[in-house]
Image (cartoon, rainbow, N blue to C red; front, side):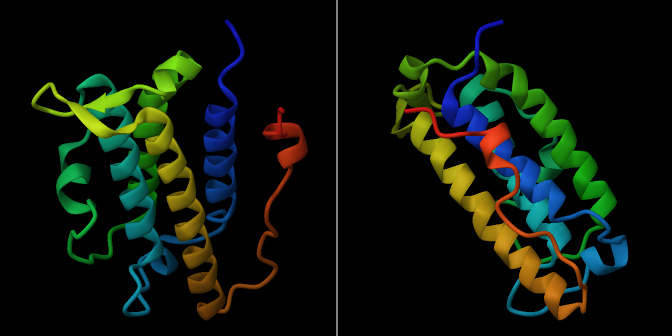
Length: 170
């Protein structure tokens, strides 16, 4: 198989950092909410929603987990689901997305996504991917703040091993 596009490597690195920041978080702590923020488990499900919407629905016209689509979209009401269940959903969705990501070319990333009505959207797949990456980092920081409020110590430092996992390729 050919090398994946550098932007895909950045997304995968970002995902790995997001997951690393969740290590040792319990279901109980994952559901703790410090208003007005959502809880950690909601944030996990929300990013699963984004990957499903951007890369399964718009990218492949597929929807794996309708409940994620319904309950964790932007603007969905706050809730406190179990972190373990939301991680299962996130892992299932990202596993379904990965084969599609592996095939993306620079040309495909420059193409507009296709809306449900078959018309091209305003954003390209590359812009959607950048949006997802930045969104992960936003919620990663929010999750770390929640962990600090919960009294967690010895938290991971960021960014991790970017030099090996997702180095800049000029």
